[in-house]
Length: 110
Length: 115
Image (cartoon, rainbow over the protein chains, first blue to last red):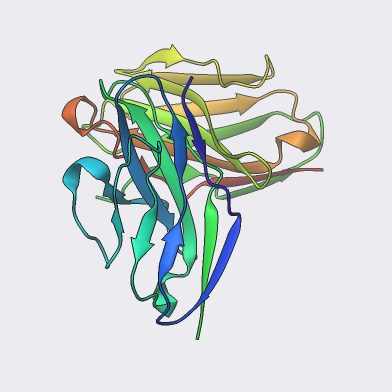
C-alpha cells in the first residue's frame, strides 16, 4: 500500500533560517514523489517533482530510497514561503493517482 | 484557461439534505479526481475517472456518496443524505494523463458545512 507521512503539522521558522519539511513514504515499487503547495487563498499547485531534479523558488528535494524520504529544503526561508505543503506519491507507472500526506503548515516569522 | 472550475464554492446545509458538488475539468485533460480535505485526515482521494470512466472508487466513504462523469467536461459528487461528519473541503482536480500523470491541476475547492 502507498503511504506518505509528514510528521510535522506545523513548522515555524524565522526569516532567513533554513527550512526542512519532512516526508517519508512507504511503497513497494519505484515511486514518483512530488511536493504540492497551497498559499493562502490560492489553489493547491505543484511545487516540484523528484524526477525533474530542479529548484523551484529556492526549494529542493532529494529522493532518498534508502531512507524512503523526500524532504523539502530551502537554505533561507522567506515570508512568502508561508503556506501549506503536501508531499505526494504516485506509482512509477504513472497511472496510479496521487496519495498525499496530511500536510505541514510552514509559518515564516519576520 | 480558467483552470478547473468547481461550484459551489461554499455550501451550508442541514443534516439529511442532498448535496451536489460540480466540477469542470481543464479542456483536454482525460483524468479527473475528487479529493476531500479535513484537518484530521488531510487530503483523501475519493474517486477518479479516466476518459469519463470511474477507475477506483475505493475511497468513497459509504453508499451515501456517489460520483458521475457524464462527459469529458463535467463531473458531479453527490452526498445523500448528508451528515455533519461530511463537513470538509472537496477538491476536484484534472490531469492530462499519460506521461504527465502526477501533476494535478486543482480547483479552488467547495467548502461544505453540514449542520
